[in-house]
Length: 418
Image (tube, rainbow, N blue to C red; front, side):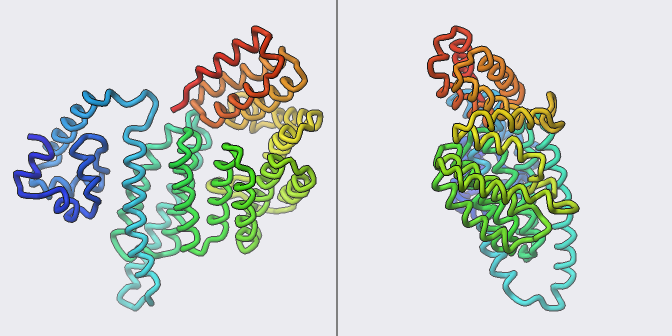
């Protein structure tokens, strides 16, 4: 008996089953068609509603997924299973709960709620610690997409925590804004721009509700990166202007406003405004004046070690090749970009040097830098490095007549990312 048949045998429609479980009807439809699987917190409720055990439920779900694969074929290798649908389900459920919890959190807390609030703070602290660990794992992971399943599970768990009680505590909302930024980072690296933008928009909205200007500003900065990847520099600059105003109201001990300035420099470089770019980069460099831990290592990782590579990227955009080469070579000499360290950052710097070589019509250097960046993109499955390499191909110019450059271009064209 299939999942749909079991539902019908008990007299439930998709609508009534959805109401019992607190999900949308389309979610039930997707479960039954095998397009998505229920999240762990939903499985027990579904089994109870269908009056079966968890093992029997697993059998019904497996049958539905097998039937779906006969129609659509197996999932593409390297892709997180049911990525888009699961993300959409989590986002919709999260927004529904936020609507309720936001209203409840606006009410005064009476004495009867004191114990609940204390437990809530403890739960939020657990999420904050786990989020910090996930950012470290993400930063060290060769393939950023490998972190996705854990991020999705934590989002599902956070949704359950919000549903369990008042859900409006600022710490818990901070954890949500943090986690949605990480989800956006994973999506952005995998070339899933729509998912990335949605995650960043959620992070900004929750950061606003939590009154956390730094989290809110950082979500806008990450959104601006998506716009710049599509060469929408004016739209990115507008987002960054808003982020700048928010960062001023944030924690002066954090480097948020310096990161905003650094990304503003890149947006101005894309617009061809050298003076505005250098003014913004000057503001970013004052991060070195901060003392203590100005970057939390999680959703805010900007410190002085990134300035050279970002300055180099700006000068490449502006056509200031000598200054760009000096900055990028200096960046490659740093420990953080040494071979075997950050694949994305090293790959981006190498691609910048390859662009400089192409503009100088130095085919040998184009191939040397480009091939190392290509190897890093393959090893990490990074859509970010792959995008930089595709931009490099547009800069080949007369160098494409060199058979080595043409071969490199063909390999870049065949490069696939999850």
